[in-house]
Length: 569
Image (cartoon, rainbow, N blue to C red; front, top):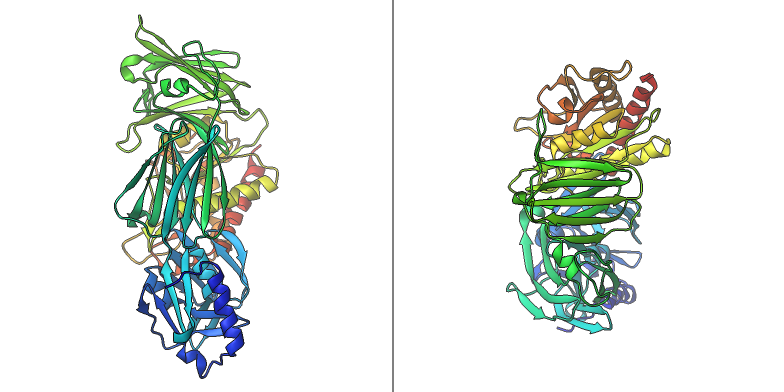
């Protein structure tokens, strides 16, 4: 069967226009197959304003997706391979993973069935649609990865992919070793890993295969680029082609290794087990496999540190781990470079941070089987008179929190936190958000960061889960929490709880003393941990999946923080 790629959708529309299909007769003859299986429903596909609408539940269940219907808001949510689409009946506005888009024709409610535009769903889920006119048949199939090529021109390498059809893709950059991972959700390719040995000075190998990880909602064609060193890239795409141009990043000479620009990349190889990240508020260096302290009620250090103007040096025994030697040029708004030196006689390693301003460095080891590293977070404490708020989205990274019907608590927490951060900034309130993406952050790490920043308030955002049928909002606090010029943790918790319950109209489960929670007991300012709602309660879960509800939660938290700040003298 010939593939018409993206233009086939136009063919379907033209067919519907010229044959003048009517709901009572001809439309009942029109059939839809999903991956070769005939779609059966008591409601037939219909045409509205030259767009074909299909019953959403029957369609997505054939694809293995989940669908949720909110009777109160008349909203349908469809989740497939981490692509979440939210539509409202008779509303052209639609949300795709939180991004707003518009429909030509909105979803409709017909004979008790939710009908959605086939073209839109097919595009968002990377599905390939064909029209077979003599059979009045629409076929919907998973797209396929057709070819993978890698070429080189000058100092740049180009990855060229051809697919049946695609719209969505995800890119992840990994280090140690340097890699770029590209996922195309719902796109089929070989189950067996294929390998292209390019060795072109930029990309060593290109690996690709079908990747399925149900626990994280991933079913995709995965392409992995094994790089020679640090890199940057650019993307060009059509409906059927994806082109990524990759070039290596520049570095500078160091005392321990010479670097021939555009050629020898030895300096990047000499620095081992080190990753530097500058993401939003958080700027950190990670030492992989190396634990520089023990954290808890007391901190035991396995290093010594020296401050010299804008230069910070941390020195530790080489027995703790190897980070190589050399210089990592950063040149962002925080650091000029990071340099690593070793003293073989003393068996010591020193990491030197050459900064562009005076900063504080919080060192926290994370002795976890999955993480097992030390995070060095670079911070600019609030000045006297500044009222800084630390926002802590609960969980992150491999710590998902509660999981219900394919939705991860960590993502709900982050969404509310980002909305809160935006609201506070609009009121010119200084904030620091612990994570702005799906990153792991240790519990003591969160508390110590807030303390080092001289924050006035700390709010940790979570959502609840229970094996018994319960619902509602609750806010936790440390029983003998800090008093910040008249405001206690209990005072802060009461304000948070009142604002949330009033705005969200959830059951008031009250404020609760929690003496053993690290983020509450280790923080030095009034701190709360709020449980916005219960994911395991279907009614509250449906609300939590609505952007409007999460915005209300963020607004309630914002109002509570503003009110609490007014009480701090």
